[in-house]
Structure formats: structure tokens, C-alpha cells
Picture (cartoon, rainbow, N blue to C red):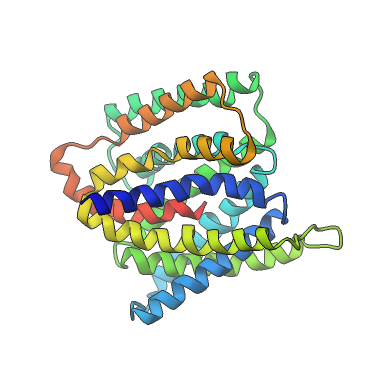
Amino acid sequence: MIRSYLLLLFCVTLWGSNFVFGSMLVKEFPPLFLADVRLLFTSLFLVLYAWVTKKFVKIKLRELGLLVLLGLVGTLANQTAYFNGLLTTDATTASLILSLAPIVTAVLASMFLKEQFTLRMKIGSGIALLGTFFVVGIGAGLSISKGVLLIVIAMVTFSASMIIIRKLTQTMQPFITTVYSTTVGTLFLTPAALLTLDSSAHISHEAWAWGMLIVTAILMQGVCGIVWNSQLQIVGTGKAAIFLNLQPFVAMLVGFLLLGSQVTAIQAGGSLLIVAGVVVASMRKKQSVQTAAAQRMADGPNRCNV
């Protein structure tokens, strides 16, 4: 069991660090080019893994339609907003905003999947939104920048993609859903990325930048998803979900160590409120845990898409 906890902590540490690495890489590559190349390497890894393990299945017309929608919303719109947002938003703020995704997903699920939005969820949402106000409101001098708005769009599109994934996983296994959705999304993103390239576009020639790009694509967006799913079945979803809430704190720590990003008292207090709100909103009654387990197995690995 300790080994499983360490592996989950390993995944969450890498996912939290991913915000900082993204902030570093977006200074070396055009945002859409960066997103596209990362997803290209991730897709190649996932397709190879699925081929070796013989997990490919035929997809139905309805599933293809959902995959196309997922590619447009969960990849093209999400990655465009996310990496452009990182140009002017620090990694800590981005990670805190994106940590609201479970709450927004719950709201969307109540609207489109007719799932119940309980009083506990409403209270948790209020606490988390108060924390967000501290981080991007008071913490930013009561001004919301374009970068913050783009990160909010990235968070909302990510949440919307979770709803589409829930529909897909009714008939497809979570892993193969990730393989197909990542690949389809890459196909949509590539033309958009190429259109943004011109003679003035800066593409790094530094070995460290390309190395970081490739390693983060394969390790954080590919390997971590596989490891997370495998250990989730051992530890259980309730305990694993606790680890996910550590991501903003990892982003703060790594941002301070690598970028020298200062964490203010307001940011720290706001982050605690956000995480507390998400924990309260995500709490389940004992009888609903088994029902939620299969769903979180599908949602968990997709957190690394951003």
C-alpha cells in the first residue's frame, strides 16, 4: 500500500510541476506549437502502448461524434486558452484556478447529466470561489488580466471535456477513451498550430527546452495517467482524490524553487480556501462511493491534459 501511495504522490508531484514547466516552455515556443508538439508525443506514446497491450477497439458513429466534440472543446479550445494564458499568468495562479474544475464539472453534470448538485457541493463551491477571489481578485489588486480569463476558459473547457468523457466511458474503457481523444484532439490542433507560425515565431534551439517538452509530454501526460489508473484500483478513489488536491501546493513550491515566484499570504490563504472548498464539494456519502469509483478512474488521468 505504501508503494501505491508513493506512486500517486509521484504522479501528483509531476502534474503540479507541469504548470511551472509549462510557464518555462511557453517562453521558448509559440503557445499552440508547444501544445501541439507535446500532444503529438503524448499521442504517439499512448498509441504505441495501446498497440503493444492490444487495447484498441472499434468505435461506433456516436462515439466518433463525441470524440470530435471532445477534440474541439477539450483539446483545441482548452490548449489554446491554457498556453496563451500562461504567457501572462504565473503557474501558481493557473494551478489554483484549474483546481476549481471538479466543482465546475459538478455544476455542468447537474445541467447536462441531471446529476444532483447537493447542498454540500454548493457550500464547497462558495468556499472555493471565495478563495479564488482572494487569489485573482485581492491578490491581483482587484484586477483580472487577460491571462487569468484565458486560464478560466481553459478550466471551463476542461470541465466540459469531463462531461463528454463521462458519456464516452459509458461504452468505452477509460484508457482507450484517453488514447482516442488525445489523438483526435492532436489532429484538430495541428492545423491551428501551423497557421500561427510565421517568420517572427520564436522556436527554441536549446536542447534543455526540447528535452523538457518531450519528457513532460511522455511522462506527465502519458505515463502518469497509466500509473494513476493502476494504483487507483488498489488505493481506492476516496484516498486518491486527496492527493489531487496537493497540485496547487506543488506548483507553488516548484515555482518558488525554479522561477523564484513569491507566494503572498493572500495567495496562501486563498489556496487553502480553494482546496478546502473542493474537498467539501467532492465529499461523497458512503453508499455513493462505489458508483463514483468508476467515474473517477476515467476523470483522474485526464487531469494531466492541461
